Image (cartoon, rainbow, N blue to C red):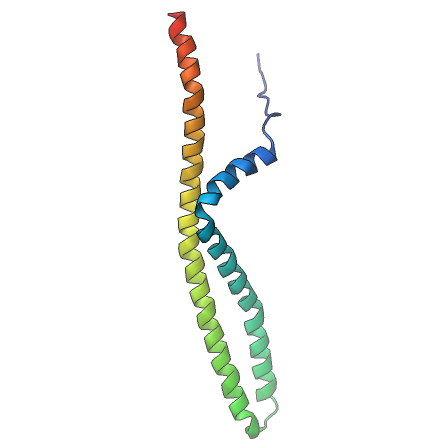
Length: 128
């Protein structure tokens, strides 16, 4: 007798509801992760454009543009430093957020399971 389990009552909306209940406890780290990811991704796109600008300045072979090239190099280093800080911030808060949410989901599932097991244990104790 091979019975298939019925998962029809498990909906994405219900899963997201339980997930959101846990995420609400860690709003700050959730938004820091989003902001740090956005900043880092934006700089991943913007910094190569600065290198292109530097290449165009250097290929002009005009020594009057040396100060402009220096300015671009300083901007690239500053943006790289901001990107590094953003990635480190993302890594720290993402580790904290992921572990906290996973622990919260386990706790929530365990509480749900314990709540049901009391009623099952009551029925089983009546059978004896």
